[in-house]
Image (cartoon, rainbow, N blue to C red):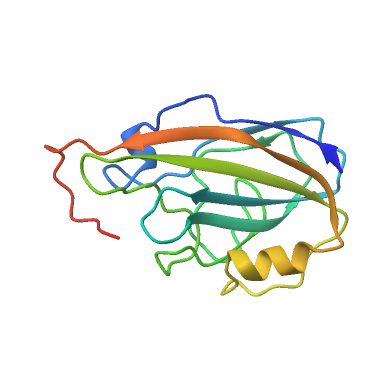
Length: 160
């Protein structure tokens, strides 16, 4: 499988991309994309008890930039077109990190280059997406990692 390069431009999340801010999806820069379609899985392996999925999206036409602020619609058409699935919060689209106060969690950005569009509903989860990608993956890039630590004094109504 051919590598693609995934860059997020930060090693620590700004609050605007987290539950302590606006939960805005961050910009993702891609290099060496040769596949016609892309899929994204953003997850937190440090969540207690299981990996926590913050974003699953697919049927993104090949691009070198996934812009910030993808709307949390099942199938947004702007600023890019894609289908977004259900995250571990049980909502559609991106929802940023929200570890327990005082804990630091790592968030992994994994991008897959696919040979075809996937026929999945927006209710699909990470597991559904992974099954659908079997036999379609041409490229993979999963080396973009950022962390987020919620400070004790941060007031937020968001919970896991």
